[in-house]
Image (cartoon, rainbow, N blue to C red; front, side, top):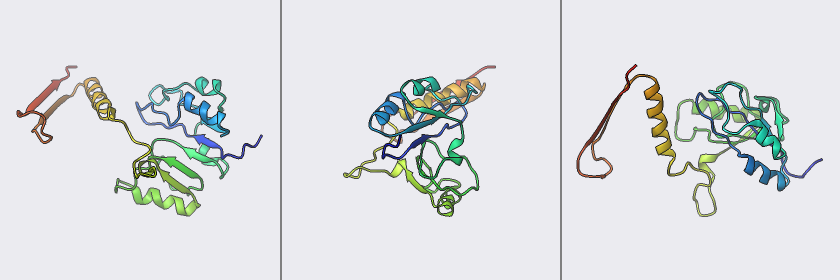
Length: 187
């Protein structure tokens, strides 16, 4: 039954060892209760690419599960939501997209990515640049995101049997002595 609200289509995003999700089951329930139809693509069955939330959690709150990658052939009026940049391709983009596109700070491939939107008549709302009426970002990684990234880097390095050397040359004014950390990860 039509709700008067656009259908939100959450992409299944696949990057090795990244399990982020653009929606939580709780947020999905709130969107559904507000009248938005919500489609969630099934998560990859490969544990290296699986979303942090199980498909069943989205289904339990009333979301409709659709096949992974179905956003590409979805009806044009759907809003395609995600977190990560789109997979590299040459196909024109005809939908409205909401995600971190990584295009507006001259990141690699930005021209190619942005060129896909006018070719298909699509629109990009880059989460990095959505602001409230006071000019503050409405979507950003929290204070602890950097710590989580550093911890993940150490974990991956430990698994790869590599050596890490890092020196803090007091660039940020923390303390008055350089700190050197060396971690050797034996086989």
